[in-house]
Length: 112
Image (tube, rainbow, N blue to C red; front, side, top):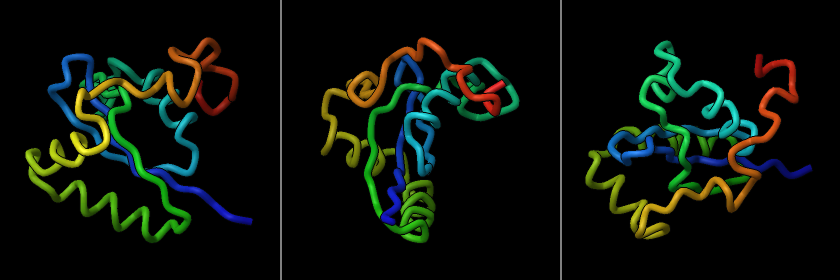
């Protein structure tokens, strides 16, 4: 069985904050970011980082972990250049990969 992992970047509505993460379920993770918006106990929640602007895929978890660490170590200008290669207008990509906003974000008990 082949696994798929995503390294992703989200931003807030003003596009002033970047959040980098990794997951094996991008739709579930974006839903979690949406649910956490405004939650001061998480970075993404505190800064409303639920808009997907960049993602890449890999089949190996160790590669995903390494890539996430690499991107987090970059200066903002280098992160912006990476985003611009895939998404030069910084369009929010959420609706391209899932129903957005999620109509039933609490369909799983672990989201409560």
